Length: 589
Image 1: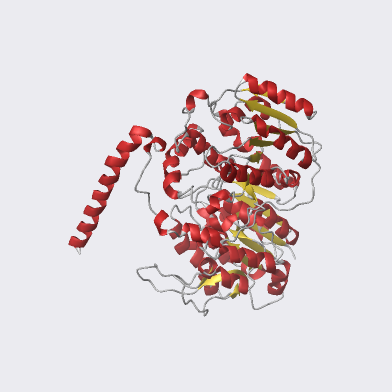
Image 2: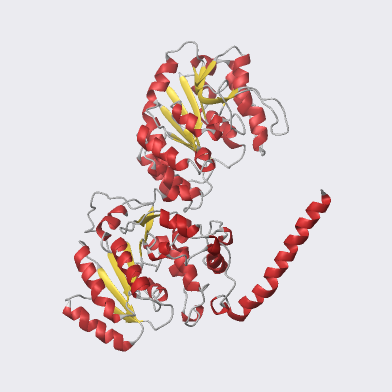
């Protein structure tokens, strides 16, 4: 059986996602020829990978005009309509779905053996009447996957339909003129179609529209449709964790491909993704060829031995140790301790500004030469150090130092750029980080984002909280955080101690995974081994007394005089504006 696949690709960041490579790898054996038609720019790296993996025979790079139907038209024109007549089967599809969830071969063989079917698809939409909610359309196969058999291909109607496709700029016109008409055109010509999941008579109770591919992913899985729409994953975030579990349980599809793609095209920290962002136990990687650096900022010299012993006990790999501290006297003491431990290190005195973050950034030239980098510091807390700083530090060491071998083995995943620690228990028993405080840091985060010249759009003011490595303990690939190092921050950029709550250092602490996201890397979380019931979080987060700002406000940590003026004038002004708006709404009623 001679088959042709016309595969349309689009990615707003001009990248070929890992789920696309997987999809083509699974589809490729069925087809004599695969035409890869991209409506977005494909990098030389991705192009070579597609060629090297032999996932395509024809490559068509085009402008993003006319959407998928114009792209399929161009694919057919490129191959030639006379050449198309030599094929027994032509499939048009795009990369807007994950899959195949099940082996696609049997679906093809079954339909090819059925003489009553001339063209087929995955799902269809029933006929709808025109209303306030919809323009109305005829029954049709949804266009993300349609397969035509020989009788349709040889029909003059086939060529006529595709040659009439125009470069519409409005997607609704594409739906009206092509997606809904491709089915009716061939039905009117006397052909017959089927879909794997015929939704025409299905119960739509509770659905906004009878589009099962988007509004009912549960039914898609139940009817074993081999592809599930990307938009369906994003649109049902409340149940997506269970959809992912079902896919993992009932199919062989690697759900990490879903996690990776959704983290790339959306924000990387959506709640439905976080359950799958934990570091996995993997087969130990050979790290002998990797250059690994460990940076330890040592403000409290009395804690240095704890870290050295943890490194010696845990690391089964060679690494270069960089130690920074604030004054020369400490450097001398640090060298004495290193000598006792027979450990070499590059010791730098970087001053007492910027805590642990700025000293790390000052090592830019050195760290840029390494494959993997670990960043730690001798964490203490001036207030209640045993209960706060001690527990915090110990748990961070348990999460990022002790399992370092497995963490670095996870870095074999080229998409993984940074590993952070899970939330220390101190912050689960005590509501210190909350939306009101985080909102104060967002403007500084936005400012840094702009200064770094980031290409992905994000407004941190819209976030209620941030996924971060508390204390900035972290493992990373240099390229994942390169924009931060390239920013060239100096001592002048950091306010004097005591730091206000919305300082640049607090902003950087919260920015790390988002910087990596901008650089097209994903993150993982090293789980806290300290087990406490989730009821602790439930109790803490649902305390009414802490669900609004406290009456007493310490403006020392909220921008000083400027913060106080904002609190006095901007807050009341917004309240008055809200009252006027609500009163005007009532009057208009």
